[in-house]
Length: 295
Ligand code: NAP
Image (cartoon, rainbow, N blue to C red; front, side):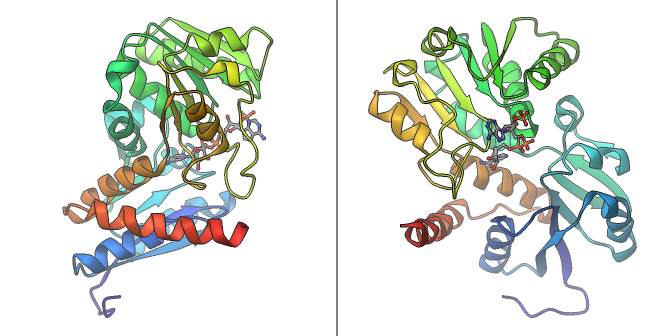
């Protein structure tokens, strides 16, 4: 780590809980590799302290910070300005302190797009199913509508009300009409999943340590023509992806998404390109350690 000096710049992440976040590892390693005079710290901040913490950012001259669960939406009321994406999605994961003006961005969209674009020929213009209705699902749906012209988006969520809210939100914000929403999981869903060229898991189901869980347990849902994308990166290959892969589907995990959203935030704060390959290798090493600890 660089030596801390009087003018070392501060970056960080606000969330609760925060102990499982890989962001401090990613950003401190990248800062170190590029020899940049910043430090990135995790801040465990409950909702009652969020506003005071943001005042602290301005008072202390913090250069910027990431935002994670549960503050991605609520933080918006304390910021001065937003990128187009953050406004459209209604969620912020990165804040830049531009001389006392706090500007909110959503770099998850960039990470999601980088993961999907390589496989777009397989699902562009087709029916797509998104499981989940939280912040990640919002970023996924925005990216799909903006970049991949789906014929229909099917939202499946444990709480049907949230899926319906999301459907209404994007109908109004992006004028996209072709939605269906379901609660997890009605009998007819197998056919819906089979007919989806892309299936996205934007829930935390299957995440470490619950690696034996999967949001879909129906093998017939998958086929060779499909792409199945899980935003989970720990484990590197979730049960959902293992199952889809064994039925011949193309699978994408959340690791590239994680690294690319971090790289975009890093560029916003420092103006520099993150050394993506080194960071990805470091994460794979770390994730394999977690896996060994579980085994
Ligand atoms: P969130 O806002 O808390 O939303 C969580 C979603 O998961 C909701 O739809 C929730 O359903 C559903 N869910 C949670 N537990 C469930 C269960 N036991 N059974 C069924 N559904 C369940 O979280 P988020 O920010 O959207 O994140 C979702 C996932 O994406 C997390 O695993 C996160 O790590 C991952 N993610 C990855 C990246 C990346 O860079 N790879 C970026 C962002 C997020 P209800 O609506 O019913 O509560």
